[in-house]
Length: 193
Image (cartoon, rainbow, N blue to C red):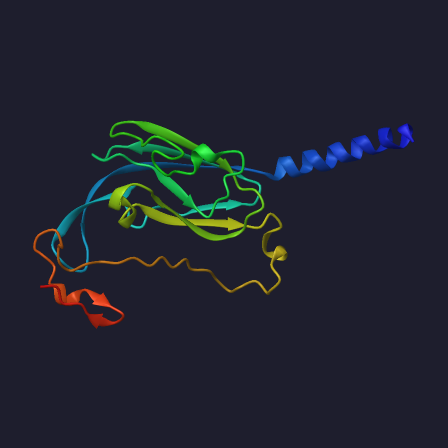
């Protein structure tokens, strides 16, 4: 009996090393800073964004990969990034809610997020997890199966497009009071006197 275990040990090590050898490190640098951008065909506004783009960069990884994101905060605001839908098994400090799993990354500071994609596939998203910065600091997070297209139970699509929805307001709601007639309750205007 002991001899059979001894013979199976090399095969087990080969399988284990083979699965580890396939995993990759997916590395990105997020430069978070202010950006002048024209939204809704209006005059330019200053927003906070990642790498000077809106939405931010798409992260693509495979199940089993390690994702490493270097956050460089050149914005005037504290910053954290939340990886929406990632389980964070063994890396709860990389989850992103400020003052819950980590202290915010202060202006001028850096932080490196590192987490493993374990047992997850799908299209998720990442976003700022502090104040209203999530309105402009966000992007897609695509987790593909380790087996590639053969792992899907349907034919390979002809192409893929990632769709990210966001809101854009034509007026600055901080500049003037909001008319109470636009406040709705059960679909009816709620008039406050």
